[in-house]
Image 1 (cartoon, protein in one colour):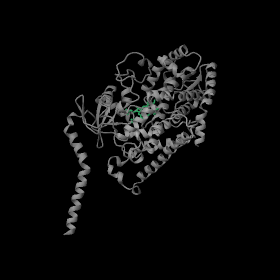
Image 2: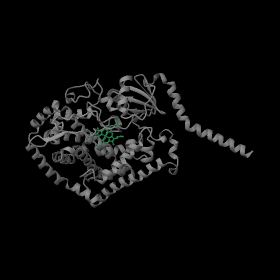
Image 3: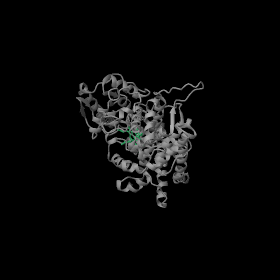
Image 4: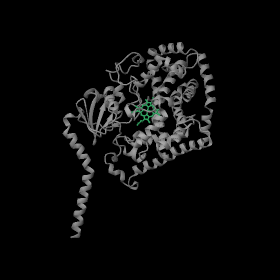
Length: 523
Ligand code: HEM
């Protein structure tokens, strides 16, 4: 008798747990079924595990229009393929389109909810975002310009000394700006710098954890609670979490020590230490927040400058002469500075075209998620949808940018209908718009201006003296997409230009000394 009661009790308990777990999914499925005729159009078959998914999204946007519906596993997914649709939803209706989908492996297990970039719209995200905003808003970003200018002078010198390794020099520039701005210590060599190496390891693990479809726990969240001893995939990310905590707190604590000793140069870390209490952040939250510019700002800045070099190799004769004429006329025989940028209309147009032509954040950054049911142009977008706005579809769209794979800075000179103020969408939208956009675009601008002022950038030549063509579609797969290695020729425009680069470099190295010393003290 007792046994039967226990059995019935256990069965009822099991049924209740089963219902509780499945109810939200059934409710969602019922809602989708009830609105099936109102969902945006989309394909019946879903491709999974594909390389460069933005190419598939582009096909879908061409076939079904600029709002496409995909049922990816249990999650409704919307692909926005035009600047207008992305603007209408992510910007204008930002109050319900600014969350993030759940990232169980990368966001919850690996990062314990401390990486703001993956955090849902929540009080934690708002605190994190406030800190990032105060550290990188336009006025504050302008205080980092001296660092960008000095590091850019080092880049110009590196291109003179060893032009064939141009890609590594650009990466060093981008990493050094971010690490100096974040922690007040520079990066002299990306191959050996400990902060760069550890951060790169951590980013690699994060990227691996976020590969859609790779881990069953994303489909069955209950697996998150399986003890690590039975789940090697979980043990591994928890181990990396400890390594991340050690890295981020170690770096922030070094700055705390320097602040106490009165030797800390200005940096985002110093700013966070001062603001942390008023914003109500714990030490660990603050340590992760100071680490966030590395993951978001290095590859995007370096990849954009490398894309500009590729555009010079492929399309140089159609825009370089005009840019050099402008630089010679406005700047003359010295290196361009940030003060020249407002007078360099054509150079600014080249920077905008670079960000448009090959958007490094090719999927539009991390996907957004909606937090309420919505209807857009008669189409039903369910609450909890993942929203992807791939910049590949948006920036290489014939109707906004005719002849889209051609590099034409002139697009950005005249008046043009485009939502927003930049004429492109490279920094995203609404409440999630890139907080580092002022820093990132200043890096792109100053280096484009200086490279064009100092150098002739052309195709490399083979042993027969023939130009080596570059493939403008040879870009990496992954969350961001950067140019794969390609050859090119970078030579000074004249001996006088080379002299100026050398002189500016010597002065820059003297000014950068405190940041080099800070890096040495810390290792
Ligand atoms: C040319 C350089 C850069 C490009 C093209 C770029 C592009 C983007 C894009 C497209 C997004 C997604 C926005 C959205 O979800 O709507 C984003 C987000 C973000 N970017 Fe950038 N970015 C650049 C540089 C930087 C830099 C230098 C930093 C350093 C502070 C940075 C920090 C971030 C962060 C933290 C986010 C996530 C914001 C959030 O989730 O609220 N980015 N960026």
